[in-house]
Image 1 (cartoon, one colour):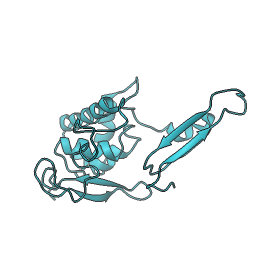
Image 2: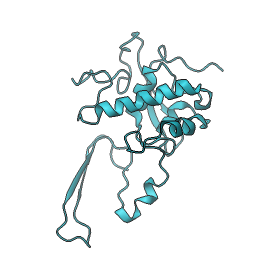
Image 3: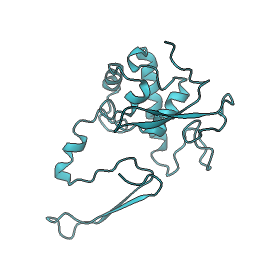
Image 4: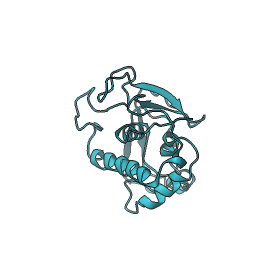
Length: 190
């Protein structure tokens, strides 16, 4: 696994059978995991992915169905690329905050209309930000002002002033971190 505090830069030359083909450079920041495979093996990594929020064949109904049947907390369900592809910790946290939903609310208990609104919100964030190097849920691109909760642990919630929290979510090896406001995103009642 790559060191999460340093950027990863990968230089790829042409495939052996494509002499003279283009060289590529990919740069990733704060990657949790990076798998590099030949194009012929791509299916082993992406063949199981759910509908792609930015794909030409995006299917909102299938995404809602996939997430709705997931018994885990909604934060886990959004991060599981088998349910829908493209949401990482940034957009999961920011979408859940915008919709006032606790990341620990069981996905299967969300009414379909709330789940649909959440997924539409996440897709909207992705679409708006795909052309920008600096990702923002607030509409601001200035450092320190780009998110409501993600990356703001211990800082005041922009809506209510409560300190933003961060906690692990999920099981190893897919365990991630989730930022949230405990006031604006009240925990589920047991």
